[in-house]
Amino acid sequence: MRYDLPDLSIIIVSWNVADLLKACLTSIYRADHPFTFEILVVDSASSDHSVEMVRREFPQVKLIAETTNLGFSRCNNIGLEAAQGRYRLLLNPDTEVLDDALERLISYLDSHPDVGVIGPHTLNTDGSTQSTRRRFPTAGVLFTESTWLQALAPRRWLDDYYVVEQPDSGIFDVDWVQGSALLLRREVYEQIGGLDEGFVMYSEEMDWCKRARLAGWHVVYHGEAHIVHHGGKSSEQVTGRKHIHFQESKLRYVRKYHGNVLAQALRIWLLLLYLWQLTLEGLKSLVGNKRAMRQERIRAYWQVLRSGLKVMICVLHW
Image (tube, rainbow, N blue to C red; front, side, top):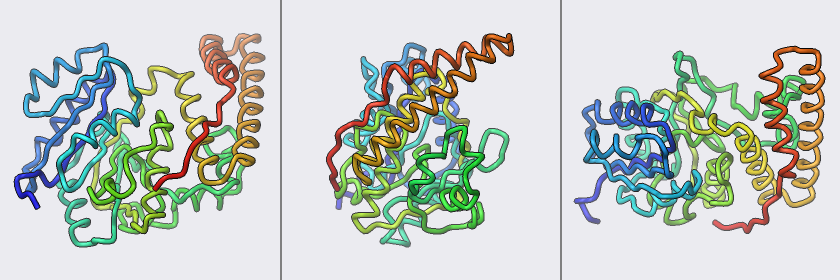
């Protein structure tokens, strides 16, 4: 073992969120950590002053400035490939680390060698809990969650999916944790590889945790380690593409683990839902109800329908 290598590598992929990135980096350096660490910022061709800000205010950060937008998964893999730590933390730029959160996560992994992946208790900007622990989705969840039908689905489906029976402050096994802050062992990365780059953004962490679980590792939610996640500030900049990436990633996951028949059925279902929403928004716009908002939604839904929501061919690997 090389003792000059850091305990932790923190990988942050950033795109046009300079102020949030600054707050994120400041929150990490603010604490007096009892472990060694490095921070790698992979900038995905930002057009704001992100790169200049990092170079000027955080010269100790290892900055990898890409000249084209390579997508969230690819940029994280670039960071993972360059990382040296025995643990690797994927951290969103719109997060802030609170108190001793990283120390708690590392200590837990140090004392539980069968745990390969761990995620913290994540808070919204207002201090409320953000749901970040999950079980793998059932068919019922796949067809209803994150659609306008979610409120009509049987409550037990989503309660099970969101692991609501466990306390927010608890420490327990889950199937997967959200990628806004996800810590894993170097050994897990070396065994199962990086993120599947077919997931441009969304569902990549579910797939990664699935592969870790299939390889025999436990995934844990740690309710006593806290971060704040301000949420979705990069993806908010491209609303139509956000819908497409979200749904195509869901379809990729379904095809990868449940087969093409279910994936194609889900694809048709989602397109019908978007067509229905487009029709409703069009009717509301015609009668003058919040017309500007309706027109924005119509453009986004029409972009999804034109895309056709491709079901990407994928190969199982772990």
